[in-house]
Image (cartoon, rainbow, N blue to C red; front, side, top):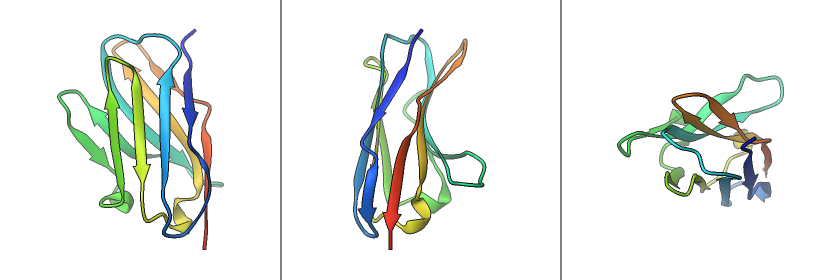
Length: 115
């Protein structure tokens, strides 16, 4: 059973930065997308940023210009650099890697931004 392991969450003041990392416990093949989602209390899970096949990226409007996603398909790793964090970025952040057969999720890492 392949697991996605996330790290890098924590508590930071508004305006600060964090870098999230995600690695698969075993090799995944035929990756379609790699990305990050987040879920705040009482809210639905939402897309934050995603790498698509061919090197494309998608960002939520709320994080454009502040967050940068990067990754390595061959190593099944994906990163999220988060700068100028805001209290509204507080959420549990989930890594996702999707192949043509199924979607894999990490266990989530808490990001808390204090004002």
